[in-house]
Amino acid sequence: MDKSKPSTIPSFFSASFTPAMLEEILQRIDENLYLHPLIADQSKPAEQQHYQFNQLPLPPTPPNFFERVAEIRGAQAPYYAVSGNFLARLIKRTHNLVLKVFGRKQAYFNNLTLNLLESMAAFTSATQEHIKSQSVLTNALANQITLQQTDYQQLLARIEQLSAQRNDDQQRIEQLSARHSEEQQRIEQIARDQQGIIAWVDIIARKAEMASLNAREAITNQTQGTKGWPEPQIVDPEKYAQRLTEMKDQVRINVGCGEKPLPDYINVDMRPLPDVDILANAHRLPFDPGTVFEISSAHLIEHFREHHSRIILLPYWKSLLRSGGKLRVICPNWAAMLEELNAGRMPLDFFKKLTFGAQDYEGDDHFAMYTPETLEKLLLETGFRHVEKITLNRINGGCPEMELVART
Image (cartoon, rainbow, N blue to C red; front, side, top):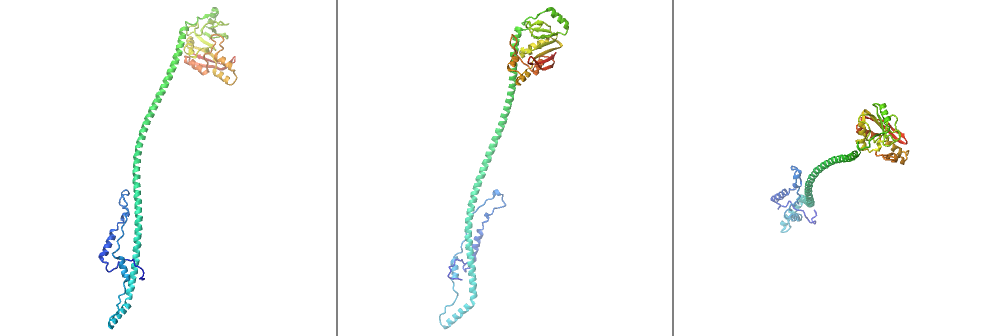
């Protein structure tokens, strides 16, 4: 071994290294075996496990460790100093020779022991340095885990806060939903009530309209009722009597004949025109109720308001007809007129004249226009049982006319 090299190896085999000292070192090693907290206790639930990272103290260096190693390295072989008389010097030389011859194995063993001690000391130093580095890393890891545990605890607290807030929000949502359902039910009820009110308003409006129309017709009927209309005048009583005799129980009258009297009818008009048999208003005819077989009217009903025809004129005519009698109505077909106008086959002026009347004398005004469907409905509403559509689009003087027959 190189004795010039400074020795830093502690001597664990010093003669002064007593068993008690060794026992103390082993005891401290056992006490420092608390690295087990680095391993989680698997017997506990995960949420109850706690990890603790503490800096572990290094085991103490044996007393006078480095001095003892230096002492062993510096120790000289136990040679005798050659001095004294001849005999003493001879004995010492002999002893030194014996020591040189037989002490080589002991020196070799001592060198092996020192080499082993050097290796152990180097390993111990490296182990201590490693433990120091691991301790630093362990402390850093412990700090990081502590921070993570703090963040985890804060996160748990935030989650609990959000969960509580979510529960509150859910309760508010449920309350708002329940309130919304109640409001929706109230809105639906209000809508139903409104629909009912609208229906009632519509009914009331119709009733008010009908009441207004009825009042107007009632006033007109009071001032110009059956007794208020002009008294019917027979133009030629003999001819009239002869015509009634010929008809027997098949009395047929043509109301509002105008310039187109019918040969087999008793012709009635307000104007004294040729071949007129009776000068009378259509509301007052010289016939008893239930005695007329047929009433014919051509282009007359449009000269009266529809409501007036519904409640006064048509009921009066129906009252004159006997059982099984019939009412023949000829008037413009307004739907056909519109088709002719839209197709360009009827001039607007002519359409206007047909719609509103020629207005060339008193009473020559049109107050209502009908289609086959609306006229049929009007006749049924006034009590006639059956309506037959004879023709729907017959051209008369450029006017598309229709003919319907209603029976009692």
